[in-house]
Length: 197
Image (cartoon, rainbow, N blue to C red; front, side):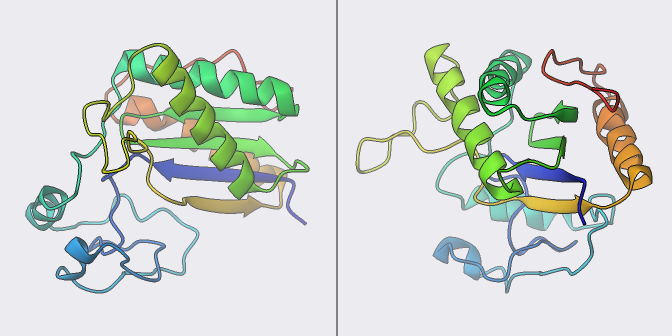
């Protein structure tokens, strides 16, 4: 039985469904991306982020997207974190680790009445609302044909269910180290209780 989850989701345009190193997608829905091949579904729960891939092909795919790929600035990441904090307080979610990266988010959470998919949806919505409220929303100048600003997040995400304290600890360590491995500062969020919390 799962005692926690490692939830990962990306910003718009970061990890595409036909990414050469693999994705968790089963189909390429966007017509403008279909010419780059079929979805590259992987079955592993291990990260494939460090596998080699064709960066030129990825840039070419990103070049045909409807909107520019989203990369959160530090100001935007802080706004997202404040939005997360509101949802975490409202739902009583126990967060062991969180990293809000420029192009994706990692969160390790204790088992909760909400499933991982609903947790990520609520957090995405709250982060977007907070960026809008603070006037720092990505893609604000890219209004769609219905007059709406597109979401800064990719659809879906990945949920890895963790069934041992050892796996939870490994994921917490991985998430906490993620910013540092990318040359960024270690992150400290007030809503993170840590493993003792």
